[in-house]
Length: 500
Image (cartoon, rainbow, N blue to C red; front, side, top):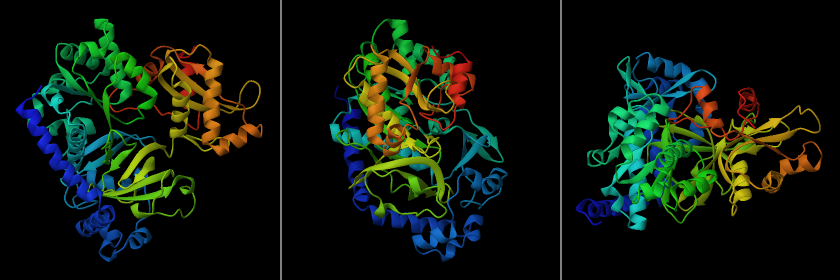
């Protein structure tokens, strides 16, 4: 349906695309400018003085003065900011702290500054506008859009607002989208995820929903509630729903289930947002990977994942990266994060322009026997195994079984099926073959009789949701790890009787 709003969206989209292409086509110069600006702006902060920012001219200067840190290493500085001190990691005080769940020390407080906050909003906006510029599809701006996210209620601590990133971003929805945006503010403030989803379903069922956005596992829960209540496919209920925006996890393991729930294919846009920065978004429907945001006040470094735990791993910049290599991504930014290890691993799918996929977490891997299996490999193996079949997977995770009751150790796959395969052993064989082709270490361990082939354990309906609820991480931005190097999740699933 043609409207002035959809026509203006097309004009705006073409303007934004020209602006994006300008820096995307000059990546090295763009990153050099970001680096110089960061050093200049932060040289008089406490961190800048401690690390001689005034003397840093080149990347090699930076490497020699600023070691790679994770949150634990940066925590002494962050605690001073949380306590209310100014000019510690970045000039002045941050506008917000995005509170996230830490794996080793409870909550993490990630600063969002006057300079960094707008880049989160701009990247999310540009992802949609680049889609409009490419496809010419702008009619969806006339309908309702839902963003499944955390509560926008913020607390204040020493003059700084505190909340979850998705809740903070909710305060920055442009005025021209506010009438289209759902759910209502009151519903968005509901803390209990199951209650919130019920309320969202009630609000959205009568509406003309055109865009739905969120982490796939939690959008799936929303879709299932809709089909249960209406007895119809989501695509029948929302006839003009044609764009799904997602981030946080790989969509491929969910794609078949989503298309079944929706009843037809819809376009999708993948995002790579985090509390620490909005790093990339899918800029082309016909290209694999997401456009790395080189002009967003973030300076990127990369370390090969298989060298990361060496004593002195080599840190490289964008100009030296290679295709299809697994890198740990290190960032420095206008949020006051310096040589910061996100914990994510990425691979480049394109160097002109620079596009990435998220291949996993440096801490989320299985290498109990030296196999170095990563998230991308298990996701790819499952995708290949079920492709072209009626098998549908709701969720899965993988853990090592080091001490089996009999036989050699193996990888144990916990899978919740929507449609179970006719032959579970055949599915296991297909996954096994794909993993061995992708990972030479794993292949050698199987061939050398150190490991036996993987085994699948079926998870009960909603078993993973019940597990996430049991640890207080149901909904919002919480994600189930695809694989672990221990049996914490595996044993909990078994102890809670969540497997068949």
